[in-house]
Length: 276
Image (tube, rainbow, N blue to C red):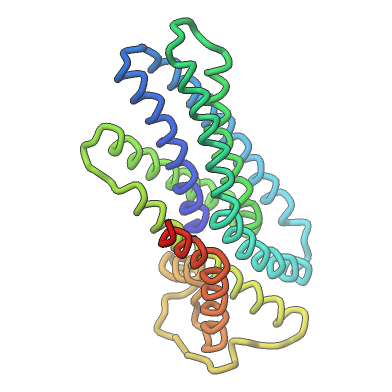
């Protein structure tokens, strides 16, 4: 649930910022396009939720057909894949996506000055919002396969409401949120989630396929942690990949993941910024 909520928050927050740009331009130039923008945004959000919930429903329907052994293997592979894929897309390809999105935003802003209802403008905004929904569905698809539908839906709604609240507060300037810091914070939070997913995937894969128990290698014996079925246990395992069988070798796997992602994706970008 937490991973889904984090991904939904990040992507939908971008959608609300895009909407805010159009509303701001419309208000400043007194173009009276607010209703048209909100209708387009509502259409995009409706289509986004339809796509995402379809993915979650499909995952819930497919889960009963998996045997225990097959489910464990599939879960381990998908956890590893999710950790690597989420980090790569959000930290690397996301820059290219943003450039493409910026071009579309600029083109749509040029149509704001037209007084009549513009179908192309309407669908441009709807598509920009829908793109964020596709990204949520793409990034959380494999994660959602092994969570209950209600958990996935709750995470999606929580992330959406948090993004809506922050986006509205930013637009009306009741609170001056540093948008860059919000994205930087969520970027590192996603990195932590990716590390936990990869670590848990490798742990399950080695245990299921090769009989290697990483939990027995330098065990930390964290018996004081809440039970995995409780809210606190679910939070720790889902976000940090920590449970009562956590071990030193599993911790090192998470650190290795974070170090590799930082070196290949974050560090080069910081060097480029200094060069500028």
